[in-house]
Image: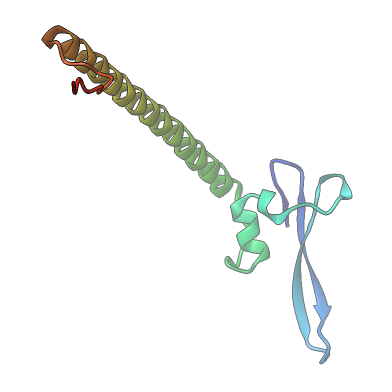
Length: 119
C-alpha cells in the first residue's frame, strides 16, 4: 500500500475470520522489523490502520500534513517564547517595584524590618 518517510511499510492482506468470512487486515512493518510504538506513526497512516480513513494517504496528503504540523510546531515555539518574555517582564516589574518600595521606605524613614520601638 505504501511507505512513510521513516521507512515503515504499510500493506493490507485478505484473511478469513473465525466464521470463514473474508476480511481485510491492515498491517505495518516497522523499520528494522522491530515492533514499534503506534504513537510514532504518521497520523495519516495511523488513521488508515485504524480504519478511520478508507484509502491510504496520498503523497500530496502526507506532504501537506507534514507542512501543517511544522507550521503548528513553529507557532507553538513562537508562543512559548512570547510566554517566556511575558513571565520575565512580570518578574522584572515585580522586582523593580519591590526595590522601589524599599527605597521609598528608606527615604521616608520607614523601617522595613517592622521592629517596634515600644519603651
